[in-house]
Every structure is written in C-alpha cells, then in structure tokens.
Length: 217
Image (cartoon, rainbow, N blue to C red; front, top):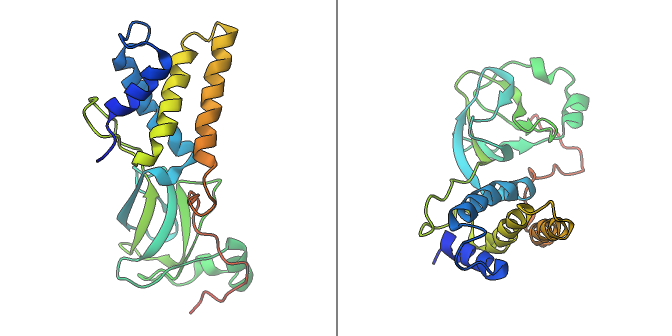
C-alpha cells in the first residue's frame, strides 16, 4: 500500500510532540511535505521521472520538454533504432564537422553537458519532426490532502519526515539551539538520500564508456 501524506506527517508529529497542532498546524506540515518532495529532487532527480516521446527541432541542439527538470537518458529513436551516448570530445575528435553533417530523421548519437541541464545535442543533426524516447526528471505532483499518497516512492518517507521536522524547527531559527536542530535534520535528510548504494544513484545520464568508439555506424 502506498504511503499516505498522513503517515508521513504523523511520523513527524511524533518527533515534534505537537499532537494537537498548536505550534505546527498539520496544514503547514502538508505544505512542508510538498516542499520536501521537490527538495529531494535536488539530490535524487531519479525520484520522479517520466518516459516521453519528444519531437526534435531541426539541427544538432535540442531543448528538453517544458516539464523536464533534467535529462536522465535517451532510450532510443521513437522508431526503435538505438541511440548511443557519446562524449562530445570524442565526437569533436572523430568528426570535427559533425554539427554541420547532413540532417537525418534517425539520431545515432547524443551528448549532454550537466552544466546545461535543459539542453542536449544529437548527431546527425535532426530533421524537423525526428523524435526520441527520453527519460526525464519531472517535478512531483503536490499532495493536496493527507489521505492522498505521496508522489514519490515509499522509500522516500524517511527523508520527507526529516525535511518536515527541519522546516518545523526552522520556524524558531532565531533560537540558536533550534536552528542547530533544524540544520541537523536537513543533514540527516541529505544523508538518507545520498548514503544509498552507488547502484541506486542513477541521477545522471549513463556515463559514456571510456574507450573511444566510432559512433558513425
């Protein structure tokens, strides 16, 4: 059974010792939960993803769909033809003029710069209406009632509880002790998110293999 907002908030209230909601009304805690879902994506963009068929614009430079936070992977052409992740340096070395090659409706390779998370490049340059199957990170939907399920997987209940408590303590941040507690809960949330095994940390597009490969086939 999916974790509900009520279950997450109840766990936070148990730590806060405010069952009556005098200091921290439950409506406020629900708002913190929604903020927490978005905060989690800063550390685990794979926590909320979508597979989409994305129509390309003509040329090598492409922009992600409007709802995308960042690109996680390019699965294939919509036709089903494979599309390889390539290092831009390798493309530049092997085919210095790859950005001006003849356009094609079939993309053979793509490259991505994490410093420019909303865009990526394709080779050969795409014709208008070429399309790729993308895995993208997307904002989680807000939870509107306590009876509703959280938008993230159940495994994120712990980090959400930590974030809610962090925000609750932050309300009294003029008190040095409370500010310290707030920061401690935020650090705990980060540890809960980043302390998982390397195999789980799939936040970045699949790394291109270190060996240089000819992507022109």
